[in-house]
Length: 398
Image 1 (spheres, rainbow, N blue to C red):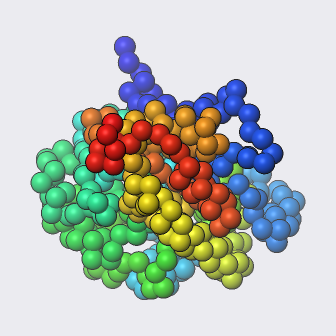
Image 2: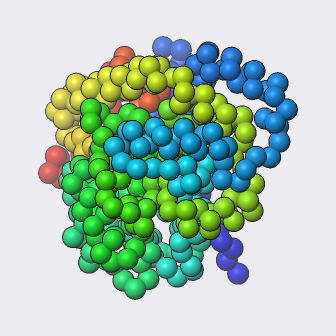
């Protein structure tokens, strides 16, 4: 008998950490860890001070409303509407214990065993894992060299079992920011075919565009088709406090409430209160964080000529990620552990983001640069450029 958890693969980040076992790094050549996107720095001091005061409120330590603190739902609705220049109400928002739970709750509310969800590849592995464990088939939608999915290609994959198309923008793992017209085309397709469009916007605060990334909320009755997911973890460094959100039709939230009440009862109260405080007080600070991430993104681009001269290719970059195609004869899943020992670099192979039968994953790596500054990115690229491994055709004779 196969259990639900046995239907999927081990957590990729945890697997990668095992590659560090038994490996030592010198002080003059420390490990460069670009395997995970979660910020390692704590919340800013002013938020930590506010959180310390929150701990003195007895209600911080109690269960709260299943769908989240009303004040947080109201504030997020107001700011969501302002950001996207479209209507959003508090009764269209649920607060979850992180964005992964937002996805899990949404899929559980939408799907039965044997249903299908379309995922562009490379996909976010935790989405694939939850679909596996739910008995829902992940239908891969191949993307081109620009990593942008195509709605008409997705149309060909829709069957009577399809319940949703799930997108991530800015993308994890590819980093690419989906154009507004791409997202609108997927919205139109979903509405036409009677399925849902999920848009995970965990990294929206670090989108490089000065204008709203899409106008989906300007569609009449947008919530009959669109479901948006969000995370406060990246914006305010609240990764350990687990606060995310679902923006959807109240009817869907009615079903999601059953899931949340069964799994976590409510998102952690301290994290919710901190998220509310952040929304109300850290706009300028968050703008500075965005500027820093955009500078690191620019550092990736600035340093790419060094790798391009060695046969590497930058497929996508944005938010926290750069997605690279390597020139070597061995596959990325074999090379990634070697990178730890030989280059002092911990990075995830593209095979962790692709179907097992798709050979493209073997040629790709994801770099998560949120915790590596411009100087660290230069060191990373120097180490990668120094690799003297056999090349794959047409770069060599392997």
